[in-house]
Structures are given as C-alpha cells and as structure tokens.
Amino acid sequence: MATPTLDKADAAGTPEPGFADSPYITATFRIRRFNPEVSGEAVWEDFQLEIDPKERVLDALHKIKWDHDGSLTFRRSCAHGICGSDAMRINGKNRLACKTLIKDINPAKPITVEPIKGLTVLKDLVVDMEPFFQAYRDVMPFLITKETNEPTRERLQSAEDRERFDDTTKCILCAACTSSCPVFWNDGQYFGPAAIVNAHRFIFDSRDDAGEQRLEILNDKDGVWRCRTTFNCTDACPRGIEVTKAIQEVKRALITRRY
Image (cartoon, rainbow, N blue to C red; front, side, top):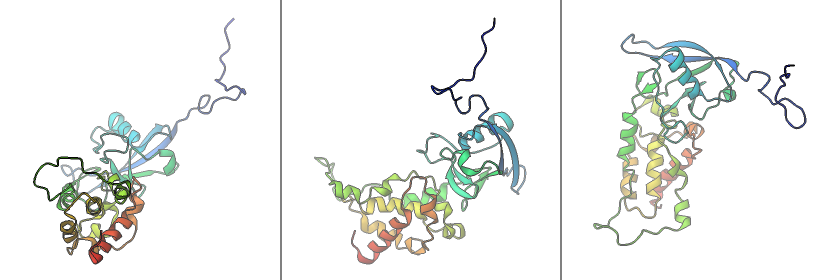
C-alpha cells in the first residue's frame, strides 16, 4: 500500500507557509530601455516574471537578462550593498537594486526601473559616472599630512575624534544621493552631495592637514553653497548617512573656520 504524502508541518501540525502553496507571484517590471545604436529615444518595455516576492529587484533583472532579453544592460558587482554599482530609480526613488525586496515595493502594480538622473545614459540602466567621480577626485579624498617623511609611529586618534567623522566614512560612491539632487539635475557642474560627504570625511579627520584646502575647493560657486537643503540626498542614501547634516557642517566650517 502506498504511503500517503502529507504537507510538511510544524510541531503543532500547521503546514509551513509557502510549502503547500507556491510562494511565487506574477510581477510586471517596466524598464526604461535605451540603445543609442538603435534609436535616440528611450522606450518603456514590460517583462512579466514568476518570482518570489522575497527576492530582490537585482534578482529580477538577472532573470530578465538570462531568460528573456540578453541585451538588457545594467551594472552590478557584489550584490550585497557594498560596491554601490547597481544604484537605479525603482518606482521613482533612488535605491540599490540588490537591497530592494520586491515585496516592499508593491508588486501588485508594475514596478518601474530606470537609470539614475542627472548623468548621461549610455545604455538602458547604465549612466556615465565620470562627472560624478571627477567631483570626488577634486575634493582630494585621501589623507594629507605636512610630514615629508614616512611616520615613525602610528598616528593615534581618540575614539571621540574618530566619531566626529564616522558617519561619512560609510559612503560607497553609489551616486544615489547626488543623482537625487535637483540642483545637480539642473547643473552638472555642482560638486554634489557625495563629493561633499567625502570631503567632510577628511576635513574633520584630526590626522589630516589639508582641511583649509578642501574648504576653499568647496567654497567655489559650484560648491556647498549651491545646496538648497531639500533632504533628497539623505532620503536616498542606502547607507543611512546624514548627508544634509554633513553638508551643513561643511558650510559652518567655512564660516567659522573651525573644524
């Protein structure tokens, strides 16, 4: 006699969620496509997927590329919210595709995916990051000291001094904050929040001796004074950095010359 098949159950006899019933849903991903070799105009294209809502938008993009359209182009690397390469606009908000769960963005409606704003789109979800990285390089994001020789001992720093700039060390250069800024959208010459955050990280580092230089760089007409304090950058940061606060601290340092 055949042994009957039973649903997997817990100790109380209750079937485990998602075991008897399929956990998959049908979700529509509406992706903004652009291929300069085909057309100068961007178009929206829909893809329907059977997918677990606990998966991430990045997983959905992989399924589309691997199973539906191999020409879909996007950046990604670590897939764990560390490299910052897969920043994009998802349902109108800057997010990291690898950290955004499908269940958290209302999969009952089409999920829109498009490139971040303010930077030239090269293809599909890939933008030209060079202006962003040039602003980053311009603020000299590295330790500068007056010593001409290698130090003979470790440069010690108190926990209090380290805490002063701890928040801005979290930046992963994803450009989510900069590309959420209306000033940057309208004028690509603005340094942007990410560059200012990375300048802040060294301006307030007690071991660094180039604070005045960085402040003068940011005192330019395209520097911190262009900020309109809309808090878009803080809302967009996937690392939870208080970006607007850091910008205000740089402004205050420019006025008081105390940092």
